[in-house]
Image (cartoon, rainbow, N blue to C red; front, top):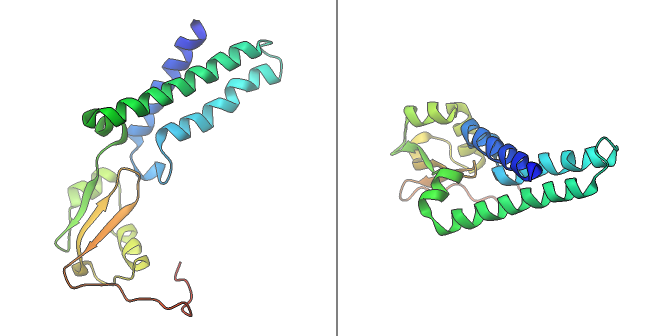
Length: 161
């Protein structure tokens, strides 16, 4: 039972810590995937190098971790409020071609970083963007002003990234 409690504490501590760090640090990976990637090898390490001779202990710890990840995803799926607390909510960075500086500062997004994302998408000026939204997965979505479209690349053009 002590193993289950210890793993539960570590899981929730790391979940809160990664949420506090912000969305950009977790780009393309959920906090739960990262926690599992960090913890599972460490859980079996002690058993593998014989510091703790019990493979059962490592297996129970890993099963506890996976159960917590599963339960967190179920709760997040069932409750919109829980989803926002666990995963965060999208943040508007640009509205009507103007930076929302308060949101950019809170999310630690520099104007140059946003401009780089715009250029990758084929936009040259901030005025071409109606909305720029930092999604809960760390990606920046761009919504152009009506009538604005990025230039179309042909297959012969080199990839700009």
